[in-house]
Structures are given as structure tokens and as C-alpha cells.
Amino acid sequence: MVGPSSTMQGLYALIFALPALAILAVVMYVPTAKIFAMAGKTKYWALLQIIPVIGHIVLLFILAFSKWPAVDGRPEER
Image 1 (cartoon, rainbow, N blue to C red):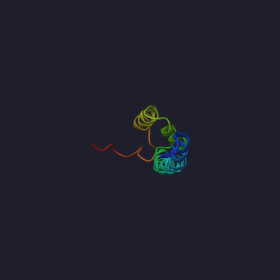
Image 2: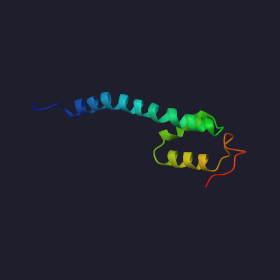
Image 3: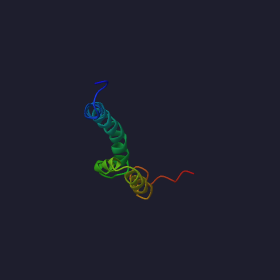
Image 4: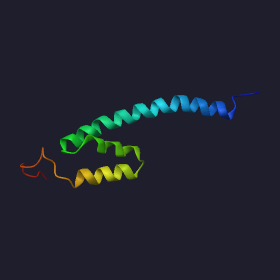
């Protein structure tokens, strides 16, 4: 046997990839949840980022076209 089998390679990838993905998910969730809180939305909308591509597009549209209580009453900056 020259090297590890494909099953072992898959196991190693799983052991190292899952914690890395979990850390990345938390790092991305926290600031996005804070942005949604400033926009007056529930922080659970930030969980949409788990869905690749479509989730991010939906988040952008929600944030772009919703009213932000923190900004309402102020003149719009251009």
C-alpha cells in the first residue's frame, strides 16, 4: 500500500473541512445578523447565507429594498 485509500482521504477531508466550514459560517453570520438588526429585521434572515449564491442574492434584495428604522427620518445621502 503506497498511500491512504480514498476512504481515508475522504475521512481526513471531512475531519478538517467541517470545523473550518463551521468557523466560516459563524464568522459570516455574526456581522450579517448585526446588519439585519440595524435594518429592523430578525437576525435569523442571516441564515440564508447558507444557501450558496441564491441566499446571498436574496439577502441583498431584502436589505436594499426594506426600510431601515435607524435611517428613517434622516435625509438621504448621495
